[in-house]
Length: 157
Image (cartoon, rainbow, N blue to C red; front, side, top):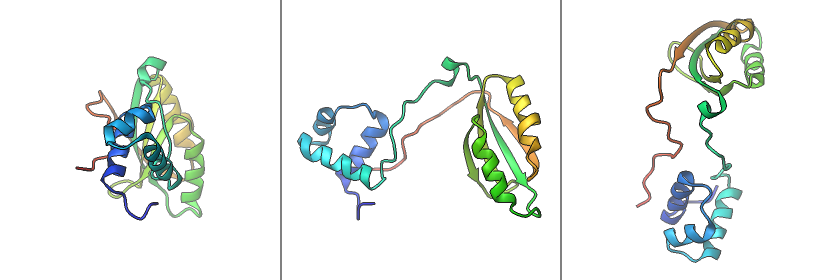
């Protein structure tokens, strides 16, 4: 990671999070530098893994993924290597798009995106509940999305 990100670096990051398809020329105009130093800064941010990757944000419903759930997972910690076995299994399940270690009433929060309720039910009963290390599952079904921003909250001005 660069020693310190300056205001221009932070502005580049904000703009790229909002539109990663912006041309280097347009980006340079918006940050007030010429194209060559702009590209150099972007490359430096990429090489330092400040910018990890670029993605297309796909509308899940447009490809038939109509159900989004969050599941609280509690592990049976008394089982040897419970954490490693659980993580291996979770990484294999395509419908699990995010997984976090959390504090509170559960050990993990996982996000699942799938086609419909019957698909989720099958995933729950035939896949998740079959993972030996899982002691308890609690589903939190989303009704609608109020906010889904991928832009990190920081000030650059």
